[in-house]
Image (cartoon, rainbow, N blue to C red; front, side, top):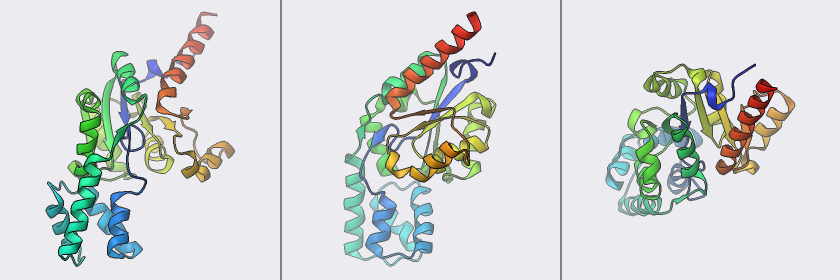
Length: 242
């Protein structure tokens, strides 16, 4: 008999944006691309630079944009400053996030964070979720490690940081293509938080039809993850004892 999910893992990795906190509906890099009228190719380049640079403030972001060949004037710098401030202050904690992280921590699991995030939004996260930030012993943040989802090296770096085999790690995230699929490719267990199911329709159809690998757990909110894990553990126990 296979062990329960809870008993088969040593560590849990959490995505941050839309998994633990909710913020602006449009990402900062999309705002930047729109403001500067960037082409699709240039927008991809700028997105990677912004998300993978440890900027200390708006002035650093403007310098990063200039390094990518984007013309930046005074009005543009003021736009970047407003965007930075908005990102620092707009986050709210998602209900059940802290409870879920505590549940796994109290179950003896190591806690980690793996997220595409720039410094302004990470500051917002530490402000609204300070306890989660403190509980995380592994932090794989794009602006710190210069890696971005869904790059395999990003997930491999987290696996190495935990010093445990990938099949003993659970990845928890809301986006199939950036959280779930790359984690499955690395041999990790996965929990798909379908909090924004309207954005995941093609992937959801693919999972249901069998054309995409199925996550170990799929729930509608992070708060539901605790119940799903407990239910599954109870079922495994009853099957074993019966």
